[in-house]
Amino acid sequence: MRKVNFLRKADKADKADKAKIKQLEDTINSLTKARDAFQNRLQQRNEQNVALRQTIDTLNEKQKSFSAKLDATNTSNRRGLALERVEHFFKGKKLSLPQEGYEAFLEKCATQAPEKYNLFMENIENLQHRGIFEQLFSTEIDMAQGFNFRKLCPIVTFQRGSYDIDLAKKMGVTIAEQKAKLIDITKTRFDAALMDKHIDPKRVESICEIGAAWGAATRYMLNRYKPTTYHVYEIDTAWAQWLTENLGVDSKSCDGETFAETDDETMDIMVASSCLYFMPFVKQWNYLTETARVLRPGGLAFFNVIVTEQLTVPALKELLSNFFPRRAFGYIPQHCLDTAFPKEEFELLVENPQKADQYHIYRKL
Ligand SMILES: C[S@@+](CC[C@H](N)C(=O)[O-])C[C@H]1O[C@@H](n2cnc3c(N)ncnc32)[C@H](O)[C@@H]1O
Image (tube, rainbow, N blue to C red; front, side, top):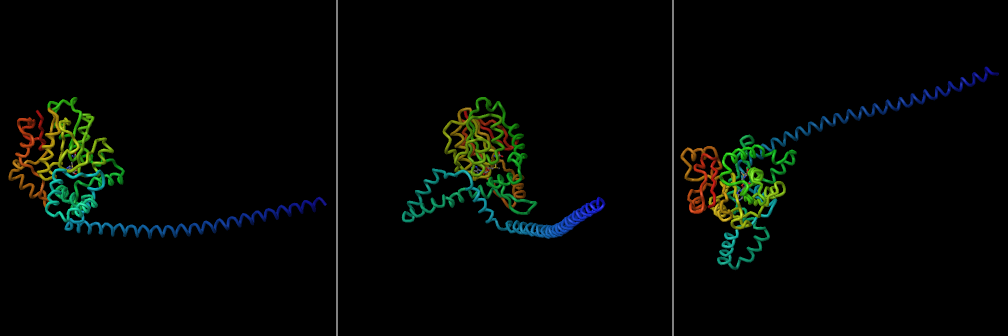
């Protein structure tokens, strides 16, 4: 009887083992199936990835050849580029119109075509004076255009603050990193030109600057003189806004030729580095006479310009050969400097500006 029980128990255990084995075999089978299905899917994905990579490569190639074609088209089509640059003018801080010239212009319009005047005013105001700004800054826009000899297409060298700022963001670099070389060159030149004997750094409380752009000169002046007031007049509205937000300076509404928002005899230094020769000489002259107005006695005007009288034949030939097709820069006649800074009121501190990277320094008596 005991033996029978034992045999029954063994039989039961055997059955349970077999059931377990069966269960395990089923699990192995379903796992094998899942693995095979997964491997199939993986292979399909890999094939899809290869196909996608090929599509991306083809698209990249197409984009490259499209860009090359676009650049090549731009070489002969400056219109698109000019319009793009005009857009930059309206992206940041508000520009203003030079009051005197604008008022005289309106008076002429009102006298010469009184019946059209109201409609004309309505139109230009609706368009935020865009047409007028386009013409007012056409020289600056044109002079900002250089040529990219690697891409063989025109290039905008400034009035493109919004482009540079976006590019720096995309590349994950700061503007100081993006413009490191120019910041460095400015420091070297300013160290060589500006001396403490010209103005005692301790007396400098207020500075104003023209065309500050990415702020190479601005940084230098802020670091060296630690002024409490810093007015900037910059027609590139995106840079104007960037300068306020990042360097803490006071970007004024700019009309491209006056210091309309700066009071008489309130500034210790006026600085304009590598910007005056990108505007017509009448605007340079106006900025310089404005400089004479806003400087305090003992204050400095520090700027570089291209003086027509210094353009020797080799210099003229160099301009012709090296700046094709852009010919023009904003040259200024010496007598314009002399009328802006008359001898009785200003002392010229640089004997030979040609030897000082064209930097002129005048001190108000
Ligand atoms: C080459 S960048 C100047 C660089 C800068 N000063 C520096 O320290 O490196 C020339 C700048 O002058 C500005 N500019 C050109 N014409 C101007 C005008 N009429 N009034 C004010 N800014 C002007 C341009 O928008 C541009 O940002």
